[in-house]
Length: 178
Image (tube, rainbow, N blue to C red; front, side):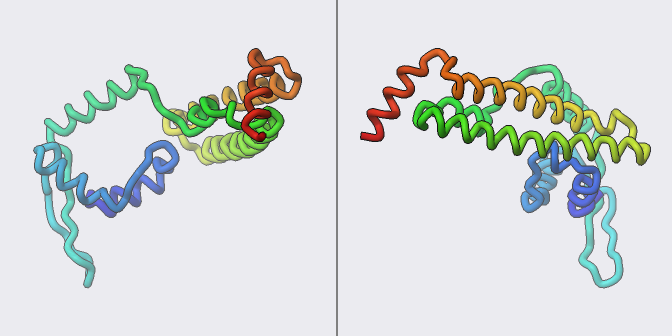
């Protein structure tokens, strides 16, 4: 494929929901892959008055590198720094009642995302898309459901005053507002 076709195919297959893609950098990535011998130019095509497009194919070295990289992604857990986790680490900076309200808002957003995710998976399955091609969507849905369950519980602990450290938290935010 040529880089534009790669980007189009990835979008059509919904990979932009699982992989953070920078389409503007795709040509730079393709050039780097070629310099490292992981892909080679196979042919150059021209369609009408459009500019020439170079079609690339994977080399044996590129195929091995892909397998190594993918194997590591699948087998080795890596610490991923989410914005939500960063926010949780700083949550004592908010008054507890504000934190509980914001967590409830997050739950509402998660419920919508979960409903949309379920609908997308059902629609794809009804259109004959094999489960193997939907597996990252299933994983994402499971993570959202786990986050929703945890967030609901955490918000309830705050609202009910059952969270260990609540007294210190309330005292801290009261001192900060003075």
